[in-house]
Image 1: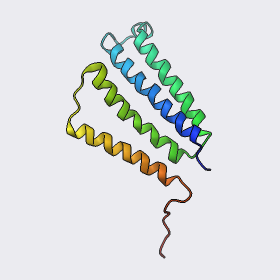
Image 2: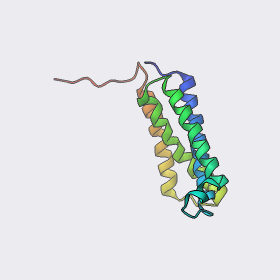
Image 3: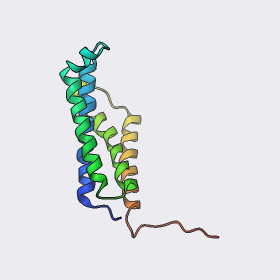
Image 4: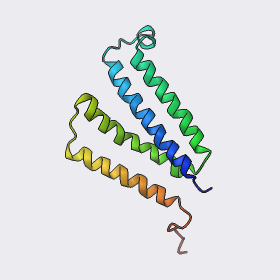
Length: 127
């Protein structure tokens, strides 16, 4: 199945929802004691869970529009968004290794997406 552009876009939107969910988890974790009441009354945790649920629905919907081998690797961009959002919201420092990792993820997602095209290079068994 050819992967549709709307499905690719929807997966990117999914990664933004789930990345913001991680940020809200972090905000909520600072005020969390590990009991059920603390979790369900912590608005940041509840918002994070809600965003994560929306992200799951978006991903499931997107998977109807293309190959899972092309779409799911895009979820890896959430590592990029969380790193950038962590710099902004928490003042976390990005060292050279983190930037190299972000660049590797970025190009990895592009390579996997290109591999999903019909005109891409395919492996043929020489035997």
